[in-house]
Amino acid sequence: MNARRFLPLCLFFPLLVIPLFAQDEEGEGEAAEWIYPVSPVLEIIKRQEIIWRPDWPLEAVPDAFTLPAGALSLSLELPGGAMYLEKDAEGRLRAFPLLREGVLLQVVLQSPSGEDMPSFALGGEGGWVYEYRQDFGGYTVSRGESLYYVLLSGAGDISTETWYDRYGNPYGFYAFPKTLAAGELRICGIEGSYGGEAPSDPETEASAESSAGRGRETEVREYYDFDSRANITRVVSAAEECSALYGKDNRLRYWNMQSGSRDDLFRQDLSLQWDEQGLMVRILGEEIDLRYEYELNERGAWILRRVFSVTPAYRAFFPSLPLETVRRIRYGTEE
Image (cartoon, rainbow, N blue to C red; front, side, top):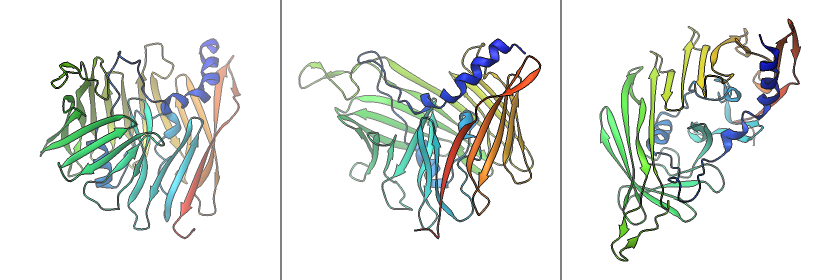
């Protein structure tokens, strides 16, 4: 083990989560405006569950957003900000975290529980608002001066979304192939593109300044594999390929992260260890060794997790300063 290579990792680790909260903003005129499709969010709301994926960051391992029995909400306080999962008194999702293209996002429902086509906000304060419009049978997606119209179609093993800008010009198209997992059809990929050169406005015979402005077209390709219990075991995209293997107890046991360049320190196989209480106590890889300690509340759920990064330098172990993750839990009996 090369100590010179590993020591920078320990210094860099506390900063890993910060980019996850950054919006994917590009320079004006250089790229299309970043958009998130509607269908994956609707599937989570329909199924009333969030499924951990192997491209989630180390700070949001599988147990991070699991609600303990009787809990209505929890928030996870990370260095880049807080993310939260919330249910209403009937046990239906009201808010949940979402990861896409390396960005950790917050979804908050804005319509009553159980509505077939719910409205929701994405990205926190100042983020995008997705509102279902009965008058044209689709969604409006807005943020500030930006406005899009989205039509959803398809059935069976594939569904689609077509996005239009405020002038009615096509802006983006998504297709969502589906596969059978645990006896139900689930989205297993995202294919599509958005952006590109804005067409001319027929009324002014000039180039229309759509809400996105002009920019290059952005392609999206992402695919998932499932096991027999509907756990996501692999995510493949243009940027990375990540995989996971679960034990008989349905806990994550092995995790392969292949993000970034060949020299990326996190391009390695990881194994996870759990104790008898079901708490994750260690993540071990060829060049990473993370140890976890917990503080529990009176109901046995963890509310504070300390992470020690252990450096195997000079044939000895030197633990780094611990990182702390606070998890605040609200139960149904609390006001």
